[in-house]
Length: 419
Ligand SMILES: [Zn+2]
Image (cartoon, rainbow, N blue to C red):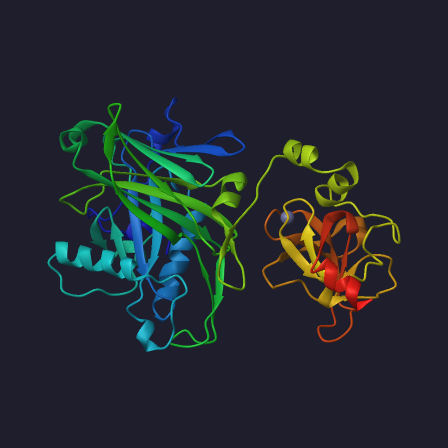
């Protein structure tokens, strides 16, 4: 795979030299500005766009995706090369609906085929800077270093609101006003158990997956061509990134591309939680200072510093009223009196969260124990821990701090009359 000597000297073979990158003053990649904003820029030399058209249903796709995935560790990632994986939906009829597939991604590939006067599409299909590219099987791509002045493409994130600006150079100046920008939110380390189709029984891991995608005309405002999009996904990834590229209206060949990893604070704003009704719930992200102002000292210590209240001291361990328990920090409904039980532990105990998506669980190795921490899914405040010694029907014991909860009686009148 890594045998550069065998690579043919064609336009598909990309230079391995990195001299441009170490030139002082050229700082591509990610520059964090504050907690909730981030700017990613291309630099002025052209960055290549590498697209992969792939499908979870196609047996020849996993090797191509694996090859794409190793670009995460490549020195030229983002600075010379921006990869994006588009999952197509045209193989879905073979028995496996690709979770990341979309008709618009299949259409992108068909548009390329039409531009190349080709009448078929296939997976895995690579497109490098708007041209069909098959050299990935022959060697490792480090990224293009064309040494051309293309202009600076900038992705400015304010939470999940994105402003794209382009300051063209060289030939790109001639087509200003005739440009569109394409923006993709990327997911990394995403695993799927494939239950049908050609990859049945395999667990596939995907990187650079386009999770959200937008196309906009670049419009000059105050002399700078710009466009605005909002990024959202309900898909959980290990890590997120963003890619943007500028294309003339009359050509599929990108003029410039930019991309980078999203800061954690920004990544938290693009993820929405989906309730059982399928509604999207926006994540709540606040600074620790803001939380400290909103919460009492005890609430803050438990919810934001993963503290534990002393047994039998909280408000709710002995509460038998009917109602719903909300996250004390953000008000998200997390537990119900319907699954509350007497555990004898001195903490409010439940055998199940209000719904599957209400809480988030993570391994906690503090205090020399391995426990599973339970957090509010919306704001990630600490609620307590879950143990496997609970009652039927689930056998689980969600041991929750009263200080992390706010109880709302279902119907105060009814509770009274039932006494
Ligand atoms: Zn919360």
